Length: 133
Image (cartoon, rainbow, N blue to C red; front, side, top):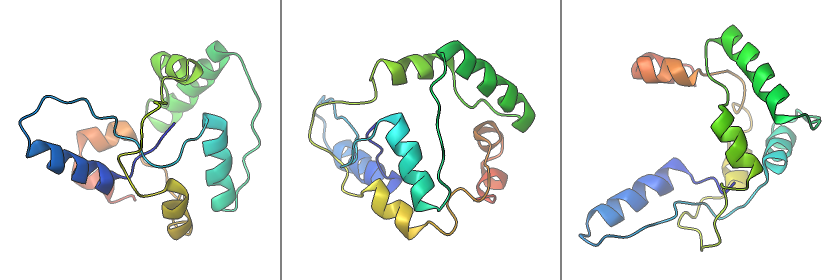
């Protein structure tokens, strides 16, 4: 995974929106993580270590489906699990963003992960959903 900061992504869109060229741009940040590394890094940053165990993909999906029903959200899809396992969230190109996720997370550690925001709710009512962050 190569997360990109939303402001870096917006700047990239503005920069390339001004051009008429047909280009493919990999919108990626300067850091690369496996999913496990990302979870461990965020847990460490917010002072909540997250022990992880490996389970079969089908079981992971089933658990996420059950929890998703409880929080009225879709936590992960089968396609996302397949993409993570196939390493499809990594490209071998220079980063287009400059903001490091670890720096951003350290700056926001006091509020990061304190509330859950439903992605489905965010799509249905953008004003209300962003108030929870």
